[in-house]
Length: 196
Image (cartoon, rainbow, N blue to C red; front, side, top):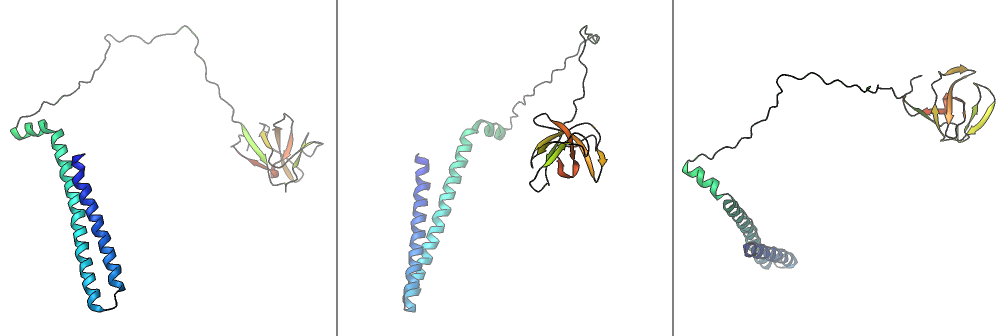
């Protein structure tokens, strides 16, 4: 705590000198006569220089204290370097494990699982119908099964798209489980599909 007392006092003095500078400049600007204004502004210049010196002294004291603290923490290493004594360098050896003779690869009697390909789920959203939704149909241009509102999330099935009428039709499954065909013009595909 005593090590910080001097820098704190210097800093408070610098703040006081800065405040005095500001006050003298304000007073000097309010004077009417040129001679009085010049005297007050000179006084402000002196307090400004004093504030700068006090700020610099604060930083100098803090730097000096920091250097002393570093010197206290590392006295043995500096003493060895001054005497020319080389401090021993400690290295950790790398452990290399080798088996002689090499053992054969272990064989397992249990069957190993085989990798299976997980199919990519292709998602689509009903969009672009002007808020009206679209019909889910039993076949391309077939009978209407149910209305799919705007924003409905669908799963695009593996069947290839079919062109019928003026539309391209995709086989889809709704969240409720209904399967059918929907016009591709009103679907926004959310994941890359394998049947595109």
